[in-house]
Length: 118
Length: 118
DNA sequence: CTCTATATATATCATTTTCGATAATTGAAA
DNA sequence: TTTCAATTATCGAAAATGATATATATAGAG
Image (cartoon, rainbow over all chains, first blue to last red; front, side):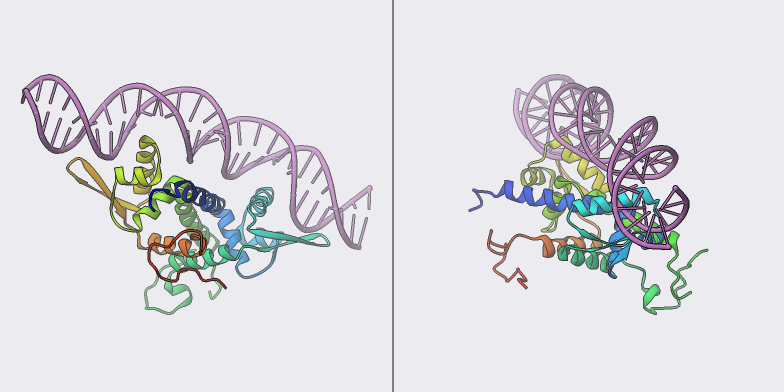
């Protein structure tokens, strides 16, 4: 029954996923997610890995938290973040797969100097 | 440099992908991409499938075009769009896989096992 | 060729959201 | 208290968005 069209349901789901993507659609937040693929990281570590300004980083982490994508754990002075959503992990892997580093970075493919400048 | 994760290069790539995600991070544009996974569609068909207002739809299609995600082909009065980027197709499939319809809620388009219910 | 209808695109406006930068704040430990 | 780690607050500029109006392109009728 194509009539009882789950139009509303499809759109609802689309809105959810779009919201997810929106959260990831910022370079810094995307880098954060990438970084967390390898496991738990402290804010300082993330800061170093992404090069983001610390207050902005904190705000971005808050967004990821609010979206339910990561969880935070405090250990004395530091706060450690890790990925929470398995679907996100799957998505991240898919993205690394599709848009990931050029073959040369990890896999010897050819003498194709890709030029790591500077 | 074995761990030559050049900040600038990584960030550059992150910016590209983030830009991609941003383009997809709107319910209507996401639905457009979903719709185009099944093949070429005219604007009117997309309009019907997404329920988007026509001028906004046109603007969204323009964004997808500018991002290089789709191509347009005019045939008399109608304009047909289709996915252009193979990486996007891969990503869309991954997303359908991860966030796709719940196993029981609505019949999958094909009668194939589609839910990995781990 | 002009008139009309259809299909799509572009323009504009008001409102909201986002972002980088900076300042102030909280929390834990020495 | 002082210091380190992280969060929250705020400001202004830029971008996104829905709604609405207008424009272009193509085709068919008269």
